[in-house]
Amino acid sequence: MKTYLTPAELQSALAVRDLSDPAQGPHAMSLLLADVTTALERLWSIGVEAHRLSPLVATADNYDRLGYSPDDVTRDSRYSRHVSPTVMLRSHTSAGVPALLDQLRAELGRYDRLHALPGLVYRRDAIDRTHVGAPHQVDLWRLKARGLLGPADLDQMMAAVVEAVLPASLHPDVEWRATPATHSYTDTGRQLDVLVTQPDGRREWLELAECGLVAAQVLRGSGLDPRRWAGLAMGLGLDRALMLRKGIRDIRLLRSENPDIQAQLLDLRPYRPVSVMPEVRRDLSLVLGAAAEADVELLGDRARTALGADADALAALEIRAVTPASGLPPAAVERLRLAPDQVNVLLRLVLQPLDRTLTDEEANVLRDRVYLALHRGPVMELTGG
Image (cartoon, rainbow, N blue to C red; front, side, top):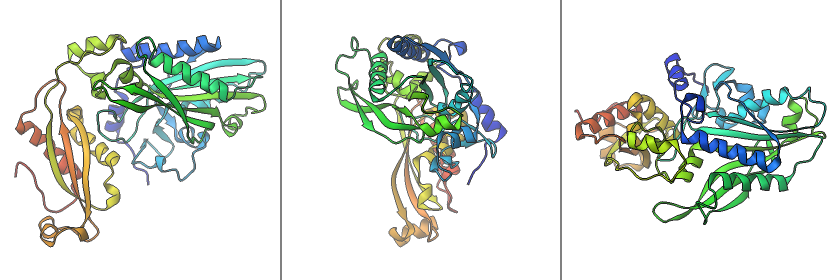
């Protein structure tokens, strides 16, 4: 089932600044993006074309023309942001590729070029220190006519991107690996992971990108003969890449208005931690209509909407327990007036604005706003009574 964004919700989404776009102001993210595209340009000695496209796309370009099945779960409004039956806010920058491929039908000679499609993408996502509802992404597609591209070229591409994001001169202990992955628009799909040392000294594998050889059916869909055309496709999360490059642990810092933090987001030098405000935790006991509603992405999106301009104060939303009515003591069922098909969800909110300390009263107000947006039971348990 699809639900559609209201005009106010759409306007709010479109007003978010694209940190990867130099035209919208200087930011380290645009510098990192330039490093990545320059590295690939030098690797292959080919030209680069950047495409900054509208985030409003045809649903068919976002899904159908990239090989997604009609019943793919990502089409659901729990994960994607639909504007109408045929238009949506793109859920990945790959949505701009079908139109790009269409334009290549007239290319009859030799062709070899890197196309970069950066920008914001819009998703229903969990709330934690590494996820936001509108992250930045870049699709990097090398398209070639009258020449072959294969797994060895893909390996070269991954190595060059890792070096651009995490230069060995600054990150000498970085390792990377490529594990098999399935994508609807690639063959020989790979997930690119990097082994990095976190600021606290832990070594951890983290996903950096997804990539593969462009699938024949995607080329055919634009009238390009796969016997003549070949391609490499990579989707790179720019927020994660920048956080790794600079050693930033909280994704909210990338948009901080703190002058001491903002000044550090104008270059790619390592981040020097600025004193952060203490976090405040609030636990909620919710009634939801069914266990399927106990989804961190769905609840996270509802919480962001409920908090509006105060959403940045929410550092994390965690589901601690999900219990059906049959699994609760009778006294608890009576207290919550829980119906047989409903569930009790224990939810933890971690509140931590980046620029100030919350008072208990302010934290309680935010807690109650989230509670009222998520709770589906007849009995209210508000801090204000």
